[in-house]
Length: 276
Image (cartoon, rainbow, N blue to C red; front, side, top):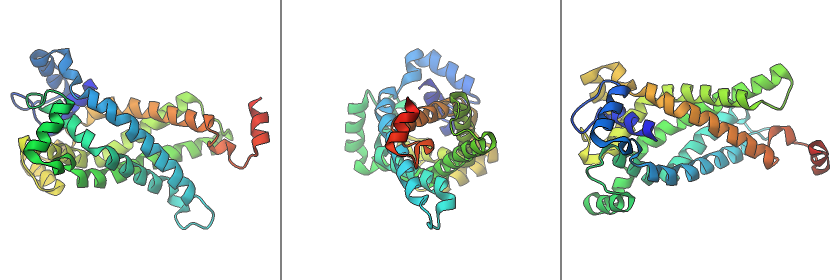
């Protein structure tokens, strides 16, 4: 969670006393001003958000991918990226208000004393719609992100199986494939992540925008192209290992529930025999 806090500071260019130049700059500023507890601001909301978000995302991915993989389906060859994009949008849409609260509590601790007070304050001052600030760029951004993520991961997994002839993929390899997929997808869509964070801050952010395009244009015109990738390194540090672990858990669950590719087309008797 500590990575989330100073990643958000870097992406938005915001701090209590000004802008920061690096992740370590943000880290030491937070430690000096708020102590180690400052690194975990918004963690409660994040814990509430992440479990249903990933559960919905992985469930939708599995269902949509299987529907698209049916013989004769015109989208069969792009089942993984299409299913991945749909899964990312479903998870984001279902838990987006919690994402907004997490961002605000992490970057604006002086305004919010807890999740309940944050909900009350946002409703009273800005209305229900504020919980969906930045939703459009989030959905626009999450589709290519999730599509790339699952496309790269599924492609690496399929390549490994063809090359080795082994349907069972070692845990370490799965961890590596998930990490590579996360790094690739976050790089492709990071400017939209920057715009999303700015929009989520609402009127209390550094700037007030009506669209992701206006955020990106202003950052580009004032700070240059590389400012659109400010905080990418910290995002990798946080996201890459988390994504790798998530895919390891996902594959373990698929095997446990007998929905893994290695089980497809086998009768229950043969699957039980294989287990024995």
